[in-house]
Length: 165
View 1 (cartoon, rainbow, N blue to C red):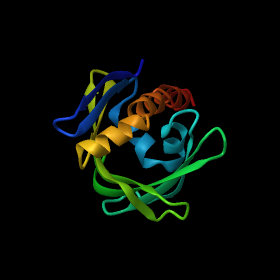
View 2: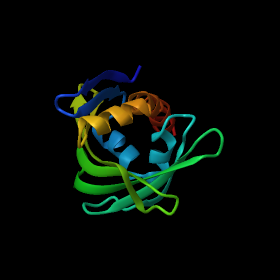
View 3: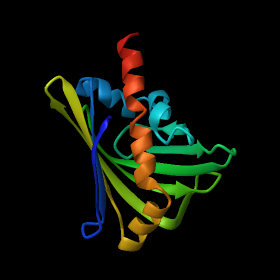
View 4: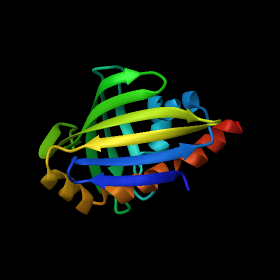
């Protein structure tokens, strides 16, 4: 399996997921950089993502929605705070209403993504920082950890397809 470890740390208000892939760092970077590739894995298989905006620059924004099995749409937004190609990006992440406007009911999280070579593979570490224990608990109850595991598990297929293309 792609996911190597998941660590939810209530004291540090963080969730860290580590995964490894049979591809080099530059190739794994492209799954973040290209919105069409991002759509192939961001969100669990039963809640695929559609990115409406993806300004992949520091200060840029992304807006997306995930569509559930019953057609329900869950909207979200990102604001890229750091982009250091090809191995580090950070973004603020929040929920949005159906028009893409930020919905502050669940607050904002901050994600940090680091890519590093491990032999001929790439280790991806996604760390999410939460504003409070309450926010971490609510996101956990919504299935964030399971959703990330399922989403990341789709990356191997995407990488294999492009490697064989």
